[in-house]
Image 1 (cartoon, rainbow, N blue to C red):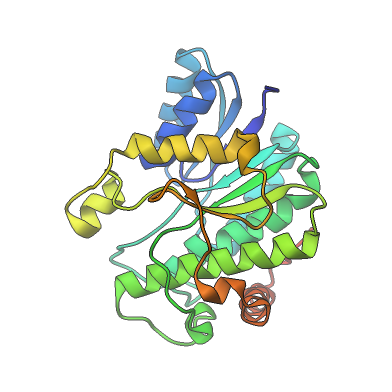
Image 2 (image 1 turned 180 degrees about the horizontal axis):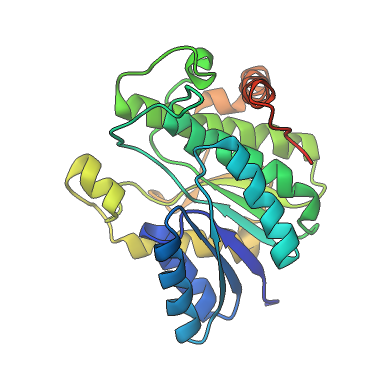
Length: 272
């Protein structure tokens, strides 16, 4: 297998970190991303110390301008990538609103991966891949909440909506590409994995976090995952249909239009 340049967002903890270790150990060049410079540096040193190729990128993905800046840094400092794993996610948070008035779950779990993907799409090779980390938790998307015009009081509801919005966006772009360019797919790495986010939210785990890291590794590299617009369900270990809303082109298009309207309002171009 050809060695790949792989960016994993949110790779200083949880399944992102474990996937980074697996991929770096296999010889791939891993770009480690996180918000905390010290954590990013620590992980990069760890991977390099184990003989892996790694470099670090720091960005707060709750802010669209910094997402755009991250995409620029990937190209200018590292010459692009072959695989993008949009893994970073937020569930519980003491401060659910960003300075732009967006729910942080929509900002990080939906808008950030969509913007980062679009900004890097032209740099990804035809045999590249974009893995968008979804969840078994998916609820119909309130477009006004996605746009920051309405609050969602329940943390689980906000998280589940943000994850379905990402799947819907992924399906829309995969259909628009029509098999041209990199493969875009959605992956539920598994429910109740033993990660910090799960422990804080539910206080219990069903599977070790390593299971989810292995799913991400396969999604990033395995030829069996080269299925544009497909949804892999880590709970059943197979590809499965997504929420019905993600199969409705009109609903998916409205989600895409809402995301693009948010970015336009914030003055952040979807493409360079």
